[in-house]
Image (cartoon, rainbow, N blue to C red; front, side, top):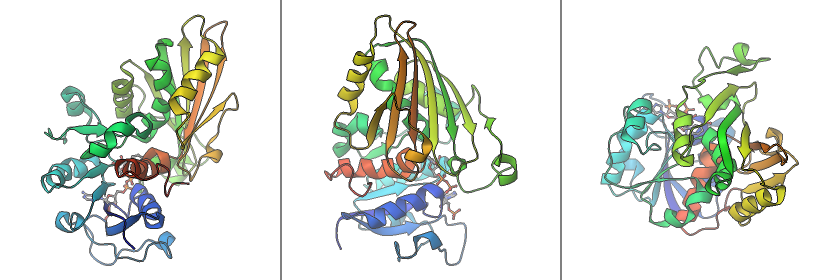
Length: 329
Ligand SMILES: NC(=O)c1ccc[n+]([C@@H]2O[C@H](COP(=O)([O-])OP(=O)(O)OC[C@H]3O[C@@H](n4cnc5c(N)ncnc54)[C@H](OP(=O)(O)O)[C@@H]3O)[C@@H](O)[C@H]2O)c1
């Protein structure tokens, strides 16, 4: 078959494996290279993709990754992306990076959270698809948002941009453990997480910087690990401008996402992770107490789907003029 030719680096990781699964089944995409790291010799197999992907998984090679491709996906640790993106750009590749390496625009914020990231002359597009469709066809480097920021920003940006939010924004989010990648640690070990829930990275998580950049306001972000393999549920607490009505809020969301095939507005029927796991949907629900101005939003997605691989593919679809949801439903 022929289609948009893509090379994927990092296919032996959680995000990369999901991306390979989606891309291999995509009717208008052809996977030309599927690469792991270069650190391990020997044949690499992905048993869950048997019957979906029958090509080889090869060690990372920039020359092979960029040979005869229209686009390259990087599903790598951020330090590896930080090193590879400049080289890929120099070779003329269009890059869709799943890592955080190039998400932050401020040099000071990058130095703090992503110290390995170099300056790039090529403009970088922050790839929250629903907010950047028009810019995608011309983008050479698309930095796909993090999973927590995708859930929070899709819920908050329509309200923030309309000036409806007043005061503190609190984002209390729960993530499945695949959000931490495939390498187990003491924190993510089954026996630590099974039957327990823990907050982590409180007031010190790099995704807060990403959210604050995009929202142009401070947020209090508290992530939690919950004993699920996949999914994020963000419960967001805000105060709205006096006089804000339910109809006005619904109108802002309809305006933002009425034509978005992968955002589902649930209004007062608050979503849960089960409804979005293994999909590319972000479901958003909310409750407003108009008298007090208190509002709670709930935004749910699959961290490896809309939070990572699915959104990267959604960006490719739009960048190359395909149907936005192609290969994602
Ligand atoms: N997990 C999520 O929910 C999620 C969501 C949004 C964004 N992200 C971002 O997406 C990226 C990938 O995350 P992940 O969870 O898929 O990670 P992962 O499961 O740890 O997989 C990492 C992949 O990168 C390869 N790799 C590791 N070190 C490398 C190096 N130095 N050079 C080249 N390749 C290397 C690994 O290959 P080997 O198998 O050979 O080691 C593997 O294929 C990360 O930047 C992460 O922050 C992840």
